[in-house]
Image (cartoon, rainbow, N blue to C red; front, side, top):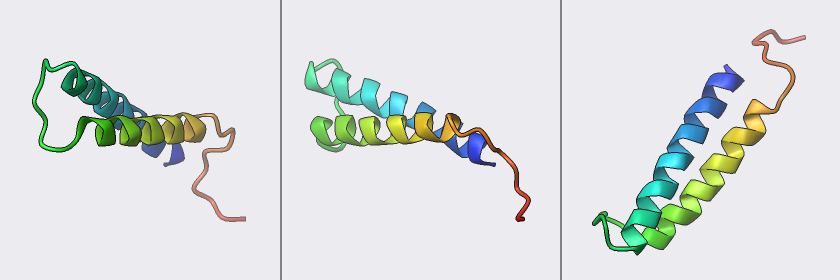
Length: 62
């Protein structure tokens, strides 16, 4: 379950980063501030990578 959440956060962060960078350089108009998208993209991307690095991926409670 943790790996799935990490994968989703990583993909969402990468998409937000790409949209933010395209918004800053004027290629794409987004609904919110481009800098906010970049900051959220960085946070989500690194949170997802951190979750993917975890060694244990079990749903069992000891």
